[in-house]
Amino acid sequence: MNEKNQAPKGTARERLQQEREREKAREKRRRVLIVSSAVVAVLGLAAVIGVIAANAGGDKKGSSQAGPLLAPSGVAGKEQLAIPVGATDAPSTLTIWEDFRCPVCAQFENIFRKSIHELEESGQLKVEYNLATIIDGNMGGTGSLRAANAVACAQDAGEFVPYHDVLFQNQPPEPDDAFGNNDKLIELAGKVDGLDTPAFRSCVEDGKHDSWVQKSNNAFVNGGFRGTPTVLLNGESIFPDKAGQQISVANLKKWVAEANKGKKPGTERSAPVPDAS
Image 1 (cartoon, one colour):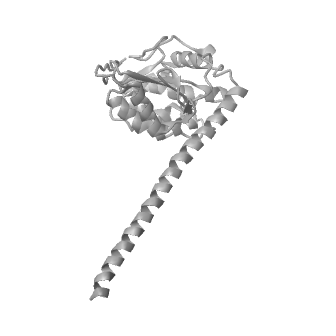
Image 2 (image 1 turned 120 degrees about the horizontal axis):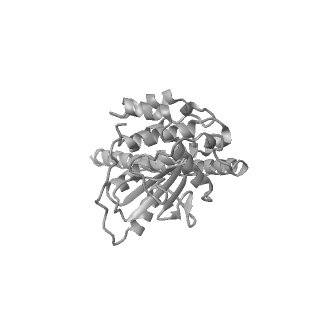
Image 3 (image 1 turned 135 degrees about the vertical axis):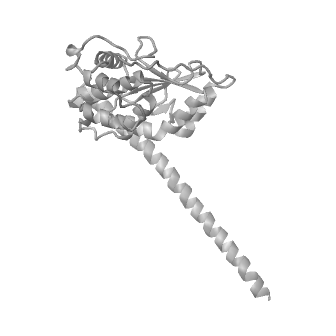
């Protein structure tokens, strides 16, 4: 009787121990994945910085061909170069400089996108997106410029965020100038409900916001930034680290919480008026 009664208990203990070991293994794999992603991003940033240092002139080729400077609707900032997302009275501001051909920008977006959207939607954070065309200047092509113009057209239509995310989720390899093809950018607009309209297509094909994008890139080149992405929380650099602390999803949330301590979440929101022209 004793042996029969003890056997199930022993089996249960063994199953519990096995489950604990499996949980430890899962946690170890999760930590390795997070650390590996951060390391890849840092290494990628170093590569981008090297390219910029070797060829820091930016996109000079297209600047002489610029037409009238037409900013997209709802822009903000000192020179009206930022596309704002979130509550205008949010207690903290995240400033992001990105290039749609930059692979590290895509890595950053893929790791932090969900958390940034959650902080923005809860009123903790206002995000100001700024566009650069560094890769065009360094590697040739027009994909950075064409994609930036297209996302500015999406801003006119009130669909900046979903289209911005679609572009980074479908980013071609860095040497591949696929975004230099307006047809590709219009094809990707089909992934955003209601964006692929005649007005959007005309805006993309005419390069309506090219001069504004080039002005933004000039501001980036002249701003003394190290590379893309450049990420600032309330004006302080947090990518790839903040005062020696490596950026991570947990740290980003912690830094925002620390900056917002004692402050109310933002509630005032203003959306760009869709441009039907």
